Length: 166
Image 1 (cartoon, rainbow, N blue to C red):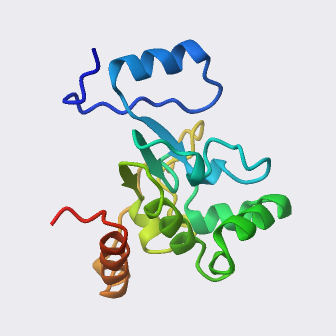
Image 2: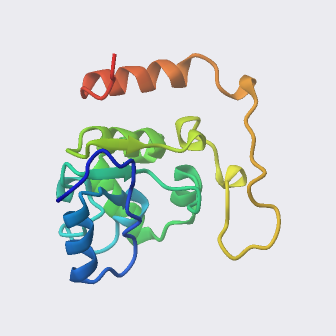
């Protein structure tokens, strides 16, 4: 019987067999969806927000991904065009906010956004690069990077889509 009281998120990224999905669901654990993995193939891509299920934890990216701005800069022309088509014209202006809005509008019960993405920071602010033996896990923010705008925008976004818990 599923146990939703356990605070566990199943890292079901990459190639996942049907039996792994059955086990995750039987245990009642939400799966992960990373929006940076969504662009470049078909509308059936499981990482596109319209394909999410409620028991999903949606991410713009994780600690192992580039920032949204860094991802956008490094993305192929096909990925960028697919993102524009899906996210709308805001993708060219503020990819991080376009991605956050799309996740916030999804049916995913939980949305997690790395702070670097809230601030719109580039790849030089990446948290971790898997396989890189040094210069990882050192990123820190300065309060001067924050200001009022990101906090107000995030609050407005979460309130508009019913994600605030107050």
